[in-house]
Image (tube, rainbow, N blue to C red):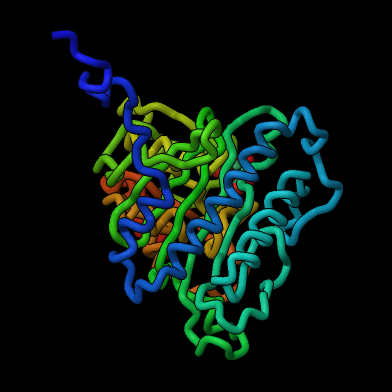
Amino acid sequence: MKISPYQADQSALAYSVGITLDRYIKLKQGDFPFASGELSQLLRDIALAAKIVNRETNRAGLSNIAGAFGQTNIQGEEQQKLDVIANIRFMRALSKGGEVCAIVSEEEDEVIDLQNKSGKYVVAIDPLDGSSNIDVNISIGTIFSIYRRKTPVGSPITSEDIMQAGNQQVAAGYVLYGSSTMLVYTTGCGVSGFTYEASLGEFFLSHPDIKAPETGNIYSINEGLELEWQPGIQEFVRECKVKKYQSRYIGSLVADFHRNLLKGGVYLYPSTVQNPSGKLRLLYEANALAFIIEQAGGKASDGTLRILDIQPEDLHQRTPLIIGSKLMVDEAEKSIQQALSEIHIISR
Ligand code: P6P
């Protein structure tokens, strides 16, 4: 008897498209403390802005939005047009989403108080990191941290709400606009990665429960600054070369971080003569990636202190950052401690 196509294995006819980010957030909502849907909505608001920024970064060369904007941000860095556009997109999505009371952005000198009397969350964000790479078509990224406000909902925003240590984050993530666009985030219950399917306008679960390899053979650092590194870094990098590790440095933090997260490796932006406190910012770069790497079983420090325990004192404060596979971060820290103890002995 001929089997009708409807009796054949239908899954062979219509493969499953997988779990969308929206459905995954709903499925995992029970994992959030005080689960009431607002954090889920906030994550969806961020994903919406990421889809819009993705479209604009993919078309930058065609729509006259590549290149410099003609102003510098508080960091003294020349803003690219897409820096400004991405900042607007995320500000607008977070403001309209209704869950956020205040935003700290790399592109804004001061805290943006949304005057939202019902917003329970504070977001710290680097809307587009590595944007100097846009014009040469190298991967770039968005980095975000989410905190619950400390003061009562509806009361004025205070520094207590803003200057929270990274160990207070309720969620964190990044978007990587690369060969494919991915959104990777954690709410403190592991790390999940989603890949964007532009034809459907959806992020689909592609990397459930990401775990950082305990060690690896990739090190990421700007070797052009070797003569400026803080004590101990030269020795660590020399040891990597003795072990014939691979040097991989894209100059785009999210891209370097993501590769090392999946394959195993360590990214280092240490204290240098030019940047004694390092280059990367604590509130909207280091803290988010530190939360993610720890949730994946890795480690993040400033060479001595756990990044997530650093108490911020300034909105745009910088920090040295050593982040990635736990055993590799351990080795870098040991090298720094060894160098410091030798200096201490010599200086007696
Ligand atoms: P350098 C980009 O400007 C960035 O903030 C990170 O994405 C990147 O890892 C780092 O700075 C590159 O800095 O000094 O090596 O060019």
